[in-house]
Picture 1 (cartoon, helix red, strand yellow):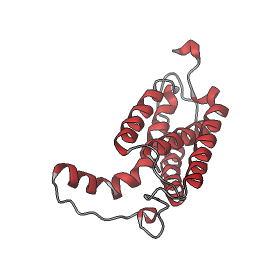
Picture 2: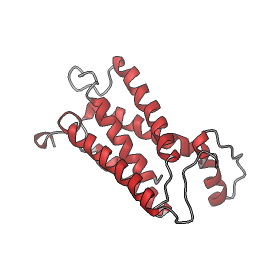
Picture 3: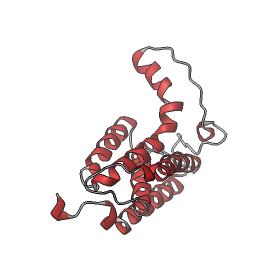
Picture 4: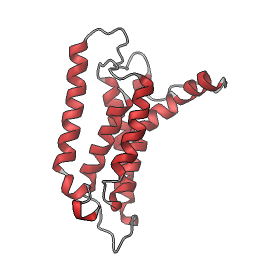
Length: 172
């Protein structure tokens, strides 16, 4: 799936998990007791990435626009997230992009920089037999349904967890 949709799901995962996050004393942004929750956020991000890549889908956003949009969306939203949830959101984001960094990063660096890094796809959802990627434009309705479901569920979670996850208007 496009990285933008992975980014949106990472924000939804962080918002949902933020309801379980320990309230820090004073303005601490890290509480050691949150380490298991932070780990769950990262691992959930990796697993959701796999689920999204397994579902049949095309790529409605061109790759350069997709990467720029995703890399702009995540930091922009960080401004509106409560400080105590920013590390959680960052680790969820890292979790959802980690499989692409590991499996696709070397090939991208090789093509753009002329390097010769080894290219090995570790995550099964990037293997042809398990990938839902559709490059020929067939099945546009199932792809639209998948993207609509991802956006709908993610935006719903963000809305439902908004009071806990995002800073209030008075805090900005």
